[in-house]
Image (cartoon, rainbow, N blue to C red; front, side, top):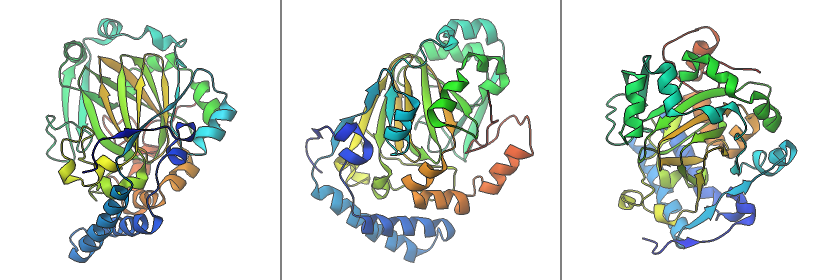
Length: 358
């Protein structure tokens, strides 16, 4: 154990400037073993190499002492040029305060959704690794159909059901008219399009630690969300399973309740941010994050393609996603995107949602 956690500020509050390094040699050894594990998951030789590399990384981070908790930069006004130079190109998260406060999204509420869509049937999908422990997912995912009004009622009562990564905006496409789509194009100079996924959850609901290939903006429409962010340089500490999903997930708990199972986890540097209504958070590719709702929330994940960030933030994980993923494979994801339309459920990765150009 590393003892009491310290607090400190990094340069600009960014991931790379202010956070302690892990020796590249030890990171590379673990990453290589993790890549090979996807092809030979039962190989004892690969497992031994992976554990040796992980042990060296644990020793590295423990040597630096207690992990620090750093803030995320916040800006009330940030030009697209400054955003791309200071945050997008450097893979640093940032909060754009009240950036969507003037959008028609401000009219979204649980009451309005209940009035407009309360009798509609929706599907909730819980995926392994990004669902809470009390949301049973025995296979890759579990889905259930519920009446939207009943779901909204339990969210406001503090129920455990949480809508994550939902394509609900495809079911109710008129809601997309409430977005300033040009905002995202200006900020990232986008040419690929934006994917939209809806999140709704009550107080106390959360999503465990995970990361994925695409960067995104998260638009917080209402409620308060608390984020914990961990750089991918600590991949060996996170020790994700080589299950070939389109995302990586870790069982490490940010409250340190299982730190004995993840040695060194209390020694990693991390960032924290609390989102208020109207805030927009940018998260770069492959940044680990865990999210908890402090009150009933509505939010939208707005994903985009930034090839440079995908590769530079985690070259090994990008290779795994492109060449070793199997749930779905890259070719399956592109097939369902380009040739299959109007599917009730399909995996969301990179281009696996309808690209919307406005």
